[in-house]
Amino acid sequence: MARIAMEKEGELAVVRMDDGKANAMDETFFLELDAAFDAARRSGAKAVVLEGREGFFSGGLNVKTLPALGPEALHALHLAFARSMGKVFTYPLPVVAAVTGHAVAGGLILALACDRRFALDGNYRWQMNEVAVGIALPSWVLAITQAAIPPRHQAGILLHARPFGPREAAAWGMADGLLAQREDLLEAARGAAAELSALNLDAYALSKARMRGPLYRRALELLPEEGLPGEA
Image (cartoon, rainbow, N blue to C red; front, side, top):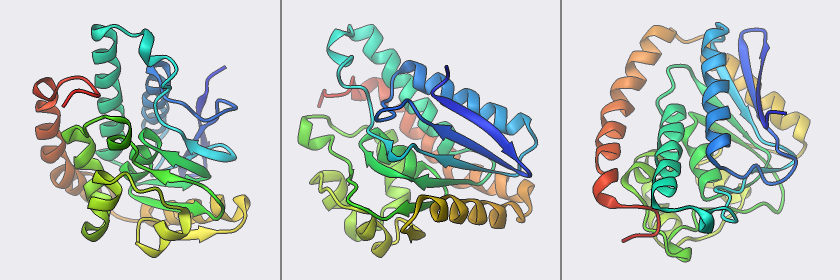
């Protein structure tokens, strides 16, 4: 059974991530995420809503599997990770995230790759913890995250691995709304997606491509010289 599925709801495509646990990311996760966004495009949807499961948007990479990977497999995973996050970041349709719980490391990168975010209120952790665990942030990660994190908070979140919660995310402008109930969260995300879908989508796609495409392509070109995750 797929952990990530796309369902058409009127003019919206809803992509749901639910592995029954932490929505941990691995190569299969990235393949399914890419397939879901491709299916959304083929469906004729005008915007995408990306939802997590109850309590978790995503906990990031499945760290339990990483020690068993050799250099080639680790590089392939890193490349799949970068390309999948870039696909969301540069997606030609509006993408709205319903952040249903914890968003850590890769999970937060994915949330920040979306155009707008709505968060479920609660004791959930948002964190870019890479530096704390010995991983130097690649340029492609910085291209995505710096586009969404206000400059005054970038050092704390990216360099100092500061954990924060959805209330802080909303106060800092990283979440467009804070909802007390999951049903209200999903409704808010759908409402925002419907609002964005009323834009001229040809102009939207071209403007987004110009705004983010060159930046992201340049960041990806640096990946070979920046090495594998964890290498300085």
